[in-house]
Amino acid sequence: MLTPLFRRLGALLLALAVAAPPAHAQLPALGDGGDLTVAAERKLGERVARELYRDPDFIDDPVLDEYVAGIWQRLLTAARERGELGPDMDDRFAWQVLLGKDREINAFALPGGWMGLNLGLISATSSRDEVAAVLGHELSHITQRHISRMMSQQSRQLPIMMAAMLLGALTLGRNADAGNALIAGGQAVAAQSQINFTRDMEREADRIGLGVMTQAGFDPRGFASMFEKLQQASRLTDNGAFPYLRSHPLTTERIAEVRQRQQLAPTLPPAPPDVVHAMMAGRARVLSNPGVDVLRSFTTPNALSEGGDRARQAGALYAAALAEARLRDFPAAMRHAQALATLVADTPEAARQAGLLAAEIAQQAGQPGPALALAKAQPLRRPELVLSSEAALQAGQASAASERLQTWVSTHPRDGQAWTLLSRAWTAQGQTLRAIRADAESHAAELDYQAALDRLRGAQDLVRRSATGSRDYFEASIIDARAREMQSLLREQALER
Image 1 (cartoon, rainbow, N blue to C red):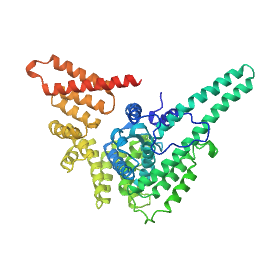
Image 2: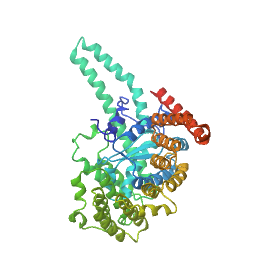
Image 3: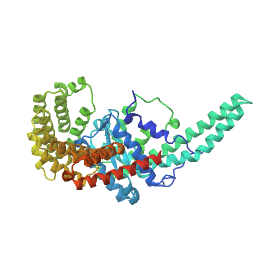
Image 4: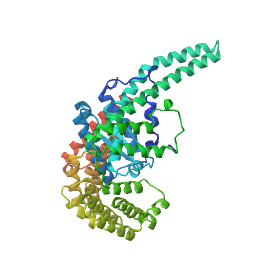
């Protein structure tokens, strides 16, 4: 069985750039992408993102997606204001965060503006400032085009490595020890140079990421506290390698550097407990697919009666309610959801999240009423749209669902989950052609162009078999145009391969 891609992607990205110049690595000028163009980097990122969408760990949770996107968009705005994100990258890159259910504390940047974030990292943080620290750091890897620069280093180093290996192979016939030494030495020089290069990039991402998150209005102290959490989490897997053999600077060193930079910033008062973040961390813990025993542990009296501030209590109640819903104990789940609503009633966004949770639990219990009421929210945000649409389909109100969803996808065409719901709504109304096209769009939104084309061709066959008077010519023309687009994208992929 293959290891989930969200776990092995770090190794995959490092494998893209395993070599560097033999001398001490020096970073190119900031923003220099090396030999890889912006368009080529976007395509490279899409190749990896396509696999992430297919990975079992991928999760499209509207509530957590919206929360993370809120932090991400603030960071992007700050990067633009600071000049770190130029118009060329801004227009061409995807700038999308994909969530994975893995409980490992990890996040990773991909070429072309894609980024992966594990639920394990969200669940381990105590504030949105810590999440912003990680996202800001990874965003800086993207804006500084570190992966493309590593690949450029690889291409420049390849002739040197090949020469060392060839010289070693020729020497083997005369002196086996000397030949092996030449080969091993060439590999060691390349490996150490790569370590130096990646260490410098990590320091650069720390420096720029701290500036971006501060510009975005987040507390820079979250950077050091997040590093401390990472240091604590790494103790179980740290092999104790010497600092000059590490691809990343030592965490203690990075914490010290961040704190030195913070001394130049104005002194801030202690941050109040972040109730909304505690609730989102509780959601991440439950959705990261723990076993039944772990779910039950969230609902024990000890878990719910732990001392702590209001934020910790809210997070414990949220996790307990969601865990009980997954264990199908809906009465207990509703009791804890109601207790949560009472606790956070005076905080608007926290109260909204408590209402969404209660509606989600009621819908799972076969009571779509609370979720249907969410459709009246103004403005209609994605979590309310998805929950109310699912409830409408459950209640036999497919027409109302399709109307809302059609409006949404007209302005959010890359929302695969919305397209899937729209396909279900049109199927329920007997509009088969539209349902097939919406299903194709859901696959296209997740970069699976072959699956999208297969469905569009099926729709074209359906049009040809239909009687002339019953054909939907407008829908058929859209299907033909989209099929040509999918064919063009597939041809581009074939050329890349």
